[in-house]
Image (tube, rainbow, N blue to C red; front, side, top):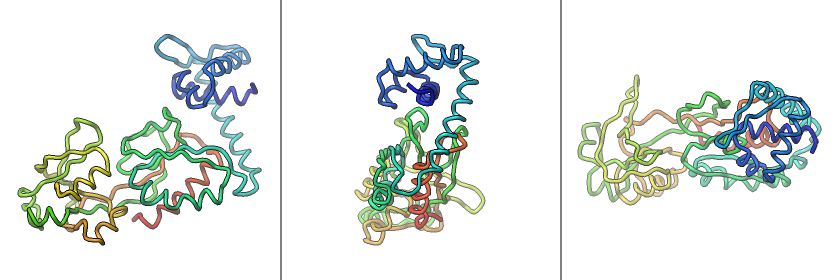
Length: 299
């Protein structure tokens, strides 16, 4: 095994703190991963990882080696990119994550044009409303909607999704159309939480100075965007959803916008990537394409 490949394996083991997970992500036998670490330890003459039955930790020397290995690998990725002459030369696999609605309504319909331009690339698209761990789960980049909390990652802001308050015609026929905040006492909200057992914050709106929340009744709580929209279409209550991805339902009259003066603040949309100086050319190209695809939907 060459030294660069051994360094790539070491960095992945260190990121995941696991030989088994690193082997799974790299699609290598665990014995190969162990041999790569042993090879580097023999080469440098130091112990890089402290292995116990419960966890894997870097030694002090391992931490120093980790930073230098990352720098070397990043420089090599950049150097390789300099000699890729055209779009058709990009190859490899991309692993990305994005919300289900964005994947279904925006990205996947445009994906054939990207793959036609880059026929040697393969793309794994994970679509979920949960916040994946970019490093632990081996993603090249992640598209996130909402306030960012992970300061260990690099964020590239793309813009914001406008939010609208909606209900189904059937719901409005039964409960009436709300016009002011006081009307919400007679209405139901479809509650959205990201984790099971989480507590809904209620109806959210921005008054020009701060964000406010009004607790509301509602028998249904969901934890993904598809179920959230479906519950609204079924007449189960009001929802607060991005206009993008739902515009066709609004235009068709299946969803009706209500209380336009009391909207929540637009949600920030960001691309997240590992905290490193350089990215493989294929990741750079995909991110640039994705930013162009998203642009018409963002404010």
